[in-house]
Image 1 (cartoon, each protein chain N blue to C red):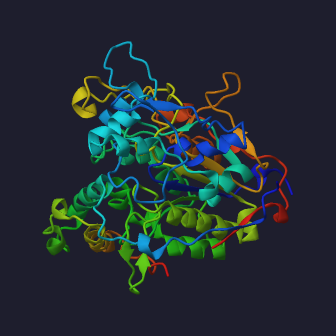
Image 2 (image 1 turned 30 degrees about the horizontal axis):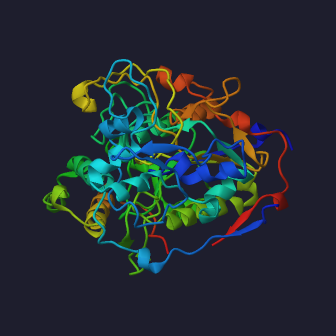
Image 3 (image 1 turned 45 degrees about the vertical axis):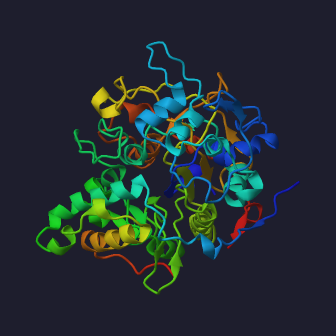
Length: 406
Length: 82
């Protein structure tokens, strides 16, 4: 049968939206102590000075109608508590303060400390405990979606820390373009035209042939036509389908119903799982683009700079940003029958064996595996941890891997 | 306790469908980016360009706009999901 890497033919990445690790998976620590989630006594001060502990009171929708701030200044407040001193400490104590600036209500602002009980998220928590969960996967920038997703495609945001359109300042190709140039196959699957894609200006505008829709992903999984590298996007808005039926957003961006995202993740998993040849030859990464303003207790670590500096006029804070530290931690799970059940990849909590991953790990892994690293890319991406060493040489039997009933 | 091999995934309540929900900053940015990309096709889409993405408010409005633009940018897509 050979080793996992002998059999590996497909890498699939599903990137969800705007939820922190502790918010989604923090509740697993109680049953699985190796998972660096919540002990229950983690707290933030509210604007009255009272300490507010984390609680398993997260709601599927309706609790975060005001989208928690996740732009650079807001995340800066969440991490540093509002200090702009040169020797300031990242204490993760500013989450409630940040949300209060939006909702102007003490009780409502405390919702930012809520997390899901594991039973509320049967798909994500089952995948996390049945396959490999990363204790140390961080968003690439302490900021919003577009710049973080850029790291997943290019290994850099070309100096952007915002939602603004970014322009390619270096001759660095996206992972998809690198693959195509080398005679390999790659595709970005967005949900449908009404949801569209978040990879618009530089990819959809110039490389429309790289794109497919989610029905095509499902068909490609079934027929065995999946490209070597696939990036899957969820549905970003509630809308009516062409047949008149209701299509719910499945991205889990607040305040979209988290349950629909659970179903979407399960659908992607089942599409791979139910084709035996595909299942045996695929590694699926489920990851979130950034934390969406929601509490996480782990201080983002330093990272290798990518050579850019965002000036204070771009960060909208008194300080420039040299891309030398990561954003807030997000859920990340690697799925494959070649992964031992219950694998927990240690993060910064383990000073000896801990590993730090971020979104530059995605093009880094794709490029190292399919192209043997042969592509022009940032130092940041070259230094980023890759994740295929987590695959073992022992494939789990078919009956040992779960299936979701949808 | 061992994990069962088949996991039931609850259905999302129909009441969660809310296309009138105010659009997030993410969707607002998406619309602006779509407009930027659309400029490449200006000869064929003048009427769509006339839509001001900054005046869109609901998820339905953003979705309708995204559909028009994406159909131009990526015309060879497969049918919508059932």
